[in-house]
Length: 264
Image (tube, rainbow, N blue to C red; front, side):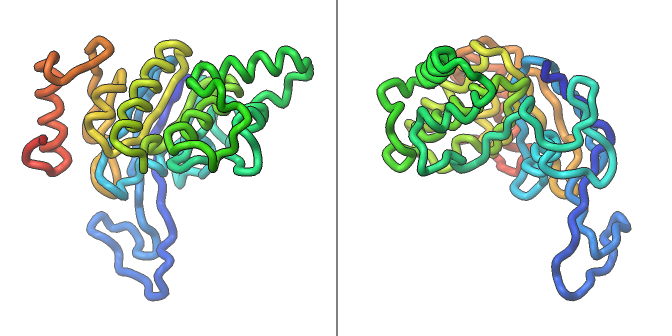
């Protein structure tokens, strides 16, 4: 489960300015802002795909359409052959900033994903399994404000995994984290993916994150966004740029593609 097909997907937003704008160069009416332009993509079951692109190109909009949190202007999204008509428990969205309920402990937040289990012993065992999976054992009874940013992200992942979704959709999951926590979370997401084998889509602005994590990368153009590049990443984990000349060469290519003349 977790096979995603995107067919001729387009999304326009209403221009909220008071004064109407003239049509753009492509002839789109000035009262509408085209964001995604006839996107065609396919994500295989069980793969992690990282989506790159310039700021404001519509990467997050694409994820929201896949998750069923928004409706396309035209085209469609299919998950396991079924059109997406709204949000559902089979595809879980992990937002940029922590969505934990602040009045609940880590244990209680994870428990929300297991509301369908009536056997309390089974439920308790499952909760502790997911808490241990993200290395938060010992923090079960802490509230979000008592956790670091990285720990909050791990707690949110545990809650998402408890639902046992077919796919995870992650929008800038490491945004706002300090450097070391960022590196640790990146490693944990890779390890988690190898363990659970779910389809995972990650929007990121960080080229290194995409190359270290993904089975495949997709690069989006500027708005209105089209698919600029798709590339398989046939490199073993763990990946290191100094050990993989091909990975380093691709890194340089992506920096150039996204408007940076050289990689640091």
